[in-house]
Image 1 (cartoon, one colour):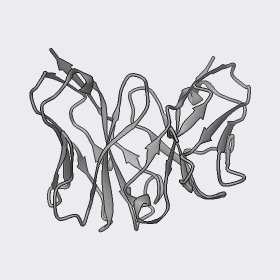
Image 2: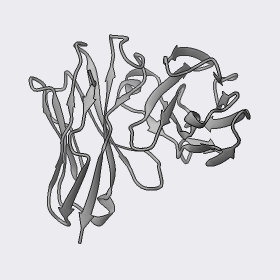
Image 3: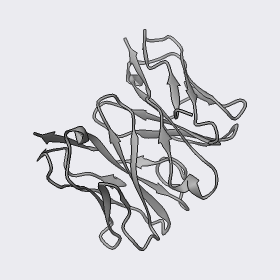
Amino acid sequence: DTGVSQDPRHKITKRGQNVTFRCDPISEHNRLYWYRQTLGQGPEFLTYFQNEAQLEKSRLLSDRFSAERPKGSFSTLEIQRTEQGDSAMYLCASSPSGIAAYNEQFFGPGTRLTVL
Amino acid sequence: AQKITQTQPGMFVQEKEAVTLDCTYDTSDPSYGLFWYKQPSSGEMIFLIYQGSYDQQNATEGRYSLNFQKARKSANLVISASQLGDSAMYFCAMREYQGRSGGGADGLTFGKGTHLIIQP
C-alpha cells in the first residue's frame, strides 16, 4: 500500500458550481479525517469518520459541505454552490484503530481547489 | 485563545547546524498528544514525531527529537545536523483525548507553522 491517495490533485471551478473530491485511506485504517488548509495557515479539522459513521463535524463545515464514507473505505467530500472563500487545499488523513489511533495520522497529498 | 502557538514564522539556518522550532500549546485536558509534521512545497503533510502527555521520556525519531516541557506547555522540535532537504513548512499539532473543545475530539489542532530554510 502506497499511503493515502486523493483525487483530483487540482480542481479549478467557477463560483456556484458543485465539486466532489475523493480520498482513499490506507487499506487497514478505519478512521478517516478531512481538513482544510488555506494559504499561510495550518490545516483546520473539518470532519471525521470511523468506518462508515461520521462521528464529528467542525463548525467550519457549513451546510454546503457534505462528506460520506458509504462502505467504510473511500470517502468523498462535496461542496455545493462553491464560493471564492472555499479556495483551499483539502487534505485527507487516516489512522488505524486501537491504541495506534492516538499517535498516528497519515495525510494524503491533498486536493487544491481554486474557485474563480 | 490559540491552542497551538508557533512564534517563528520563518527561520534561516546553515546546513549541518542543529535547529529548534518552537511550539507552545494550551489545554486543560489532562490527556493529549503532540505531533510535528513537515510540509514541503509539494503540499503533502509528512508525520515526523509524536509525544504523549503521559510519556516520561522525550520522543526521538532519527534526527528529530521533541523537547517536551510539560509545566511550560512547550513541545519544541529539534532537528540535528540539518540538511538542504529539511527546507519546508513545519507544523506543530495537538490532539485532546478527553475534551471536545475547538475542532473536535479526534481532529488535530494545528499551529500556523514555521517556514524553515536551510542554506548551504
